[in-house]
Amino acid sequence: GGGGGGGDFNHQQQASRQQKKDQRNKREEPPPSSSDVVVTLGRRLIYSHHIINPQKRAAVVNWAVELGLSGCSKIGWPGVIVVEGLESNVSLYVELLSKLRWKNLTVRGEQTVMGRPGEHLDHLRAFPKGFQEFGVHSMPEFAKLVRSVGLDELLQTLFKRYPPQT
Image 1 (cartoon, one colour):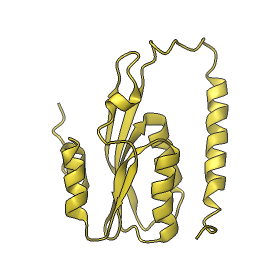
Image 2 (cartoon, helix red, strand yellow):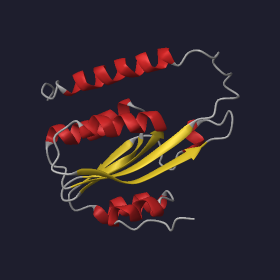
Image 3 (spheres, one colour):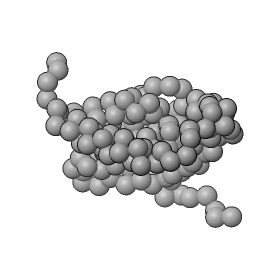
C-alpha cells in the first residue's frame, strides 16, 4: 500500500494557494456573523467514458472527502460521479478532476441550493456525509441510492434528460 499518485497533490496545493489568494482579495467588507451567513450548496453529476485507472479512482474519492463533499461514484463504463457540498468546493473538485487526463469527462447535471441565513450546509445536503464508490456492474444500486436521497432529476441528466425550462 501507500506511495504513488503523489503528483496530484501539486495541483491541489496550487489550487488551494490560488483560493487563499482569491479570499485575501475579497476581504474588504467585515465578515458577517455566522447567523447571517448564507451558504450555497452545489451538486454535479459528472459523466466519464470510463473510470478504471486506480489513481483516478483514488482521486475521485479522496478529493471529495478532502473537500468535505458527499456523494457517490460508479466505476467502469460509463463512469459516473454525483457529488454535493459547498458550491466553491464542488467547482474546485470538478476543476481538479478535469486536470487529469480523461477520454471524456463532462458535467451533465448541475444544481445549486441557497440556504437561509444562518442555515448550516449539512441541512441542505441530500446525501449522508461521506463518499461511496460502486463497482463496475452496480449501476442499479448507484441509481437507487441517488433516487433514494431525492435526486432523481439530477440522475436523469446522465441520460441527457433535463427538466423543462420554466
